[in-house]
Length: 119
Image (cartoon, rainbow, N blue to C red; front, side, top):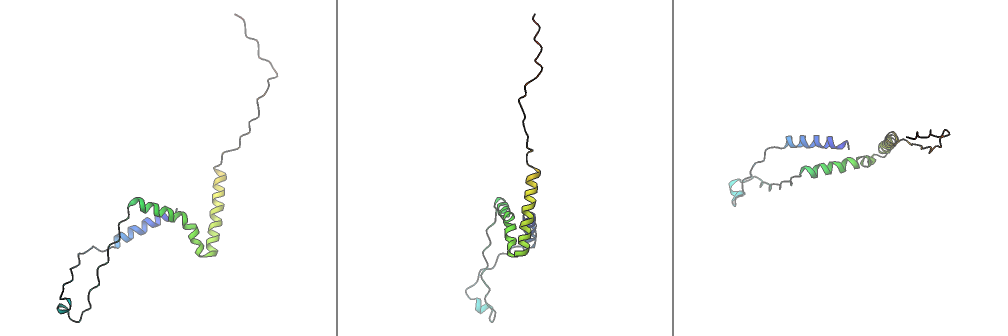
């Protein structure tokens, strides 16, 4: 889940780096006659669809949960990372487990209760 803050940081950097969008001029029919010798301008790229906040957070959560397994692309460091993760999860599981409670009873009293005083 540590990938979530990194993803948010990258998204913020990418958003700041985007230039202001401009409206391209429509291509004219006599493009070659107006600009002889120049290559035709490429067609503008369609904009990427906007991603909602929920979809972005869900994608980051999936990426965060999958990140230990994505580290297996480098086998040596990936296996060490998984071992460290599993040992940490086991220690946390043991520290937060409920204590084992032994109930010993019911006990029989050796001293009988004093008889109640009659009115």
